[in-house]
Image (tube, rainbow, N blue to C red):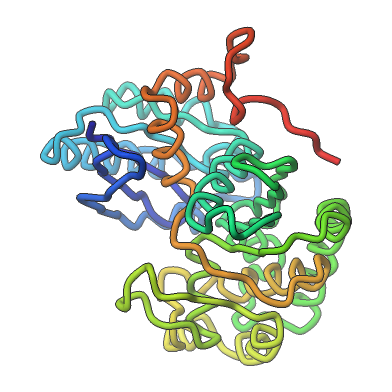
Length: 335
C-alpha cells in the first residue's frame, strides 16, 4: 500500500510518499515548497486572497507530483497557520475547488496525540514514561504518556512564528525587553502543562519539529547529512548559552549559524526562548531529537488501522463508532 501525506505549515508545504504495507512507513519520495505563509498574515491572522491562491497552487503541484509516485489523493492537512485563521473555511473550500484535494485541519490536541505516537514508535518501549515537545510556527504541542498513545495532550499558542510576529514585530534584532516579554508569556501559557509534566516525572524527553532539529544542530548535534539514526540531543545548558548570541544577531546573521536555515532564521530566537522556557519549567535537562513527527504519526495510524477511514472521521470531527478501538480519537484526560 502506497500512501501520501501533505502538510501545509506556516513556512513550507511538504509531501511525503511512503510504502505503508509493512509495520512501518518507508519513505520513497519527499518534496517541499516554501510558501512562508506566516510572513503574509496580518494582526487578525487572516490569510489574504493571494496567499490562499498560493496554497491552492502548491496543493495542485503536490497532487501532480504524488501521482507520479502512485498516490492520487494524499491525506492533506494544515496546521495552526490555517486552523486558527478567521477565514479557515474559505481556505479549505478554495483548495477543494481548485485542486480536488480535501484539505483538513486537525485540532491541536489531535496533532499532539499523533506526534506522540510517532515519537513513541521511534523511541520504543525502553523509553518508559515519555514527554514529547513539538514547536511549530503557530503552536507548541506537549504530550505525555506511558503507552502507545498519550495520557495527556495539549496544544498551546506558543509557535515560533506567531510569537515573532506578536512580540518582535519589525525589531531586528529584538530588544531585551521583547525577549523578556516572550518568556513571561511562555511561562504563563505553560504553567498548567509544566505542572503536569513535573508531577508525572517522565523518564525520557523527546522533541520533534524543524525548530528543535535546528536548535539541536546549533548546539552541537550532528548534521542531518549523517542520517536519521545518529543520536541527536539538545541540552538546556547548551541552549541557555546559545540564547544571548541569537538575541544579538539580526535575522540575516542568524542564517549563517550552524543548523539555522534562512527560511526559519527570523523565528529561530522565539523558538529558542520557548524551548528553553519549557525545558526549565518542566525540569528537562536534555531532549532527544526525534526525526519522526506529525506526518509520520498519520502514516503510522493508517498502518495500524489498515485503512484511512479513521483519518476522515478525525478530520470531520466525528465521534468514533460506539465500542470501536480508536484511541487517537478519544478525548484524553487533560489533568
